[in-house]
Image (cartoon, rainbow, N blue to C red; front, side, top):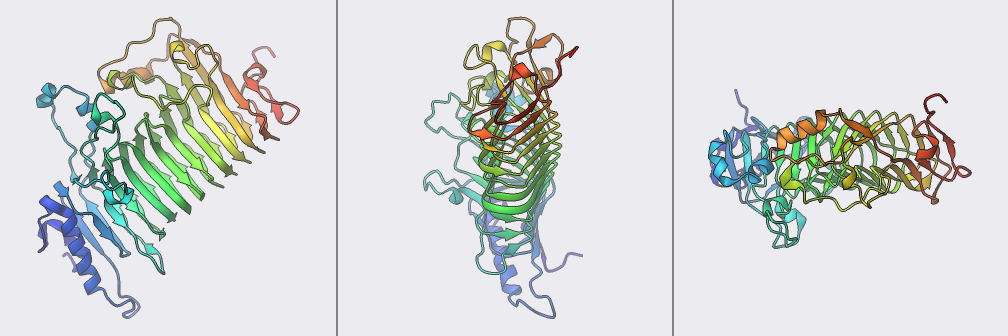
Length: 451
């Protein structure tokens, strides 16, 4: 038996959810606030509510504004399917597709901030409440937010659907909050998938966030949160995971796809952990620590950088060259321990031409500890570059699983700039593969065969 605090958007007396689910959800939130007006009634008073979105397509033309705690918005399926693959097929082939659009409990975002220049204006869900206590325990679970299309941004991209620009955001949290949860969501084709300011005890778990300009951005500052067990991958312009001024962030057991500008980008993040993830990229700059990132642990991850195998995306990249580093670290007392790092690229794709790609690059800071990382760098045995494929799925599977006929590629395993001192580098490259001032840093080389 459904209680009075359970709402079905298809069974509500205001608006049409199929035409504008935003109007319907806002009306439901207004009803919750009207009924739950007392803050303390017999040690209760504002339990919040559940808003249920059955499987189906729901256009959103009015931004949903959330300013109450203990609200759960849930659906019956994340409904993700690759829009990028569809948009890069000839339309003549669409008739043969089993599905054309994402499904499940799907919200079609029809609003945009492109004309206003205000990022929050293009958000499907906007969360903000000031005062004490902070808004708490808002949950998004098991439905799809679909940005529908990317648009021409003036960059000269031949196919506008590959710009990753449309002024749309899936979920935008503007104020400090506590114990928010995103679980089982499907988020696709938005310029910003999820943007959250001032997060505390946030859980982003088991979501599918991909083909967005940026997937997950933790901005402002925050603490004590986790990003776990997600499937995620941004476009070539943006971040798969971005965190700013954060402390105590746990990133674990995620599978991060290409083509993000970076898999993880930290800006002044401290005492956080990146452990047990699988990262895949087509570009340098997979992991970036910017500013004063201190006392972070990067351990037991698998990093893979290889070449773009899918023909429609060959023209795009993140603008970084191979001297930047796969892992580019700025900050103090960070630990980079026991990671497996694979670089498997065409010799012709190395930029600048003739240079050795850099794997781990310490640009500034002190006291960093780099130990026992296994670096495998290879290229094709033949000088002929492997042909790209028109099939995204088969091309990427083939690229991942074909490990034979590879020969070693000369790389710089660790490059420590003069601005970074008093670091320790152990067993992460032979003497000839590590460039550093050995009078200002501690070093132990990986032994060669017979040494």
